Image (cartoon, rainbow, N blue to C red; front, side):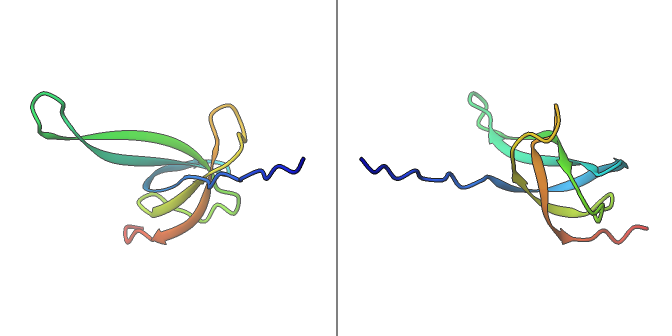
Length: 90
């Protein structure tokens, strides 16, 4: 019996770097827009995710692309894919 095992494609999201004060870890803020079920107004929800940044290349305010990975620590299960846009504030 030959069975083909399909690999799942890893999730990839973009967000804004909120903090880079930890070593090899950044905090990325993900903002999503939802429609309220009763009032039918759009609401913004924000989620903060800890992301592994091996080379420590991102700075606060950068727009980054992150990708799902196996758990790196208790709270980290995302890795930095690439820096899309760098912040101008220095």
